[in-house]
Structures are given as structure tokens and as C-alpha cells.
Amino acid sequence: MKTNFGKMEDKNYKLGKEFFIKKWNDEKIKIHSECVIEACINMSSNTNLNQDIFVIAGWIHDLGRKIDKDSHHVISLDFLKEFLEENTQFIELEKELKDCIVNHRSEGNPETIYGLIFKCADKVALYNNKWLEYKKNKAPCP
Ligand SMILES: [Fe+2]
Image (cartoon, rainbow, N blue to C red; front, side, top):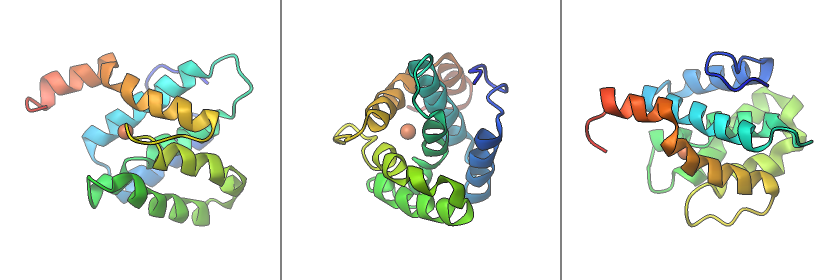
């Protein structure tokens, strides 16, 4: 998968993005999610890891923030459940998707390599140039 913005447009990337847009479409979290996915894709290039897990988890992991920031990692699991009901082809990835989502915060303890990469990517995303550019222009308060 290509990692330049606008080029990560494979079928499952679009599916995840459409779900995100339908549920929230918050610009800040959209850019953050794109940056998390990009970091995951970069970390997993030339491996046999299933990048669909990163793509789907990337679009869903912060949706819970729409409802509550403190418990968003748990609330996002409800959004995952809904996504999997609509897209049953990903049901076999549920364990890894849950690990990425529920353990992505600093206090999380990922159980799979996917969760480990994802947790790290959530932090790397804060240094992504697109994110820094967005913060500079659109969000003066940290
Ligand atoms: Fe995040």
C-alpha cells in the first residue's frame, strides 16, 4: 500500500474512512487517524502483517472521543462492533482489531504485535508533518 496521503486509497482504506465520516467526520481526528495509519503502514512494510488491521483500527480507534475522551478507547469498541456487523468479512480480525483499539493509550498493554505497532503509531502520528501543519494552521491551542 502506498503511504502518501491521498494515495492510501485501497478498498478497505475507503471502507474504514467512509465509516469514520458517517459516524463523526471530525477534521482533527480524521487527520490524526490518517497519520496513525501511515505510521503503521510504514512500520509494517516488507512484513507479512495484515495491514487491513491497521487501516480499520486506525479509522475506528478514536471514534469514542465523540462521546467521552477519558474512556474513548473502550467506547471505540462499540464502534468496532458496529463496523464488524456491517462488514462481516473482517470478523476473523476481531481479536487484533480490539487489541489495537483498547490498548492504544499510554497505559495500554497490547497483547499482539498489531497492538504494539498501533500503540507506537498513535504516538509517532503526533510528529507527522501533516499533523504538525494542521496544528499550526487550525488549532492554536494544544
Ligand atoms: Fe489516536
